[in-house]
Length: 136
Image (cartoon, rainbow, N blue to C red; front, top):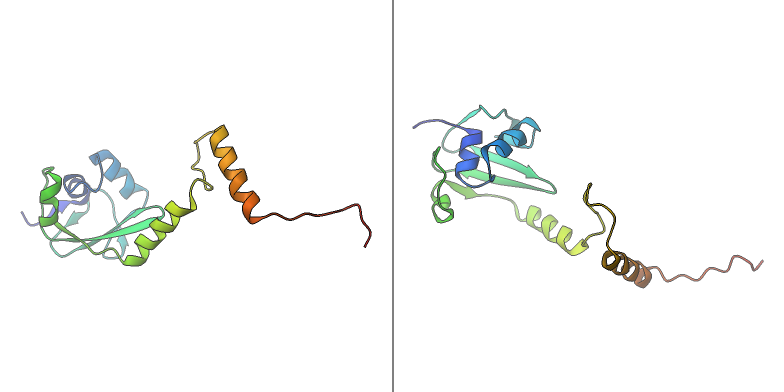
């Protein structure tokens, strides 16, 4: 096997849960091979660098082996090498620390607990007392 479709390979190496999701990521221009956006039918070969954008992080993988069959998680390391720069993991860590302030679209209204945590967070940092009635 010299070449494999990118959507099949990403599904087989467990980058995406289903092949459909992998194909949609390609269609949304979230997958790049050697710096070029690709379609799901694009063939990959050994040594290619695949960039997968899963906001807010862009993961990078080097192709070490080709397969079309899904495998166990322990075997994935034989087929790809994670070459994601450390800066991307720092972005992910910062996003986790920032918490729920940037709510995802479709998450609905905050719960009472979320509202209280948000108020506590904002009250601690912005405790200003303005007196608009005085003319000083």
